[in-house]
Length: 418
Image (cartoon, rainbow, N blue to C red):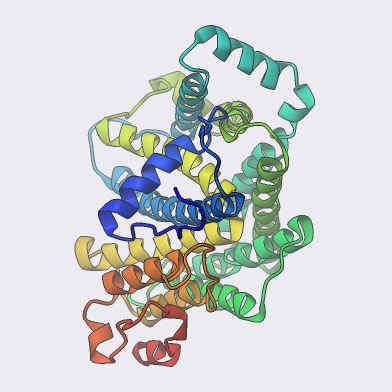
């Protein structure tokens, strides 16, 4: 590349996805080929920042797809009527952790130039010879296990509506821990977006008035226990996620090594959960009772989720991960209504509220260095998102973007549908 030449990136859908996947697979490799020609350091820095933004949105998009697919597939697998015992979710979690460890070992093997000797040395040096670094991952793994138990206590002592609304506080707690632990700075619009998103997602998951709900008397004491359990789960979720992000971004160990360490402790805590909650069923019908092709699809999607989340945390952060997860909840709800037809959209307007919060997060997207005169990655992806989600509503209100500056749109028109 000649010195001073501007970097123009392919923003077409095939070129965008193809180049992104290639760089996403190569980005974690510790060995990179060095160019033999002299390159302008400013151009290299611009390319690096542009590609980082590129991979950030690609990983977020994959996370939305993975989470949505997992939710729908898991729900179908748990409601499908079959002869014999149903598979145990606790065992599925353990198998997913083991698959994630195996996938990460294969990736480390690839980075080791497909040498078993090099792989053995890397695992020995990075895991066995660094026990304190390995033990750091026991903290988030243990917190995640505690969180699952707390949510079980919360659901046993709270009604579904109170639980769904209160649990969305994890969006704000994640932001608070990001500010305090990672010294992130959030603007007024970003805090407002978080509040809007939290409210929208809570009402999207609010039980429908038409659904038959079995009422039960809850004492003040049990409600207090449930409320404390879900609040503790919210803070533990935010802390564990930000703590894992801090470890990934402040240490030199690769994200695959960190995932192996996290999966190791996750498997131990998962096996402990199997013994406590489903030990009798496992001893009676076996560890893999009820497993079929659909069950294995769920397990593979769960394992893939661990890898994608690691990429999201590396290239983005936990706040954007929360936005992507919230978007997947909305997409799952829309698919349940339009395709599966098992959801009553009494509050469909709150889907727009949540999407408004998601899109408003980057109200003033910064330009990617080296792309002067070109639209930013965020504006490009947001434009594609709008065209995909609002193919019928947007033209009615003249809301389809006419320029690449998505942030200049008047979002008040967005609220007409609410």
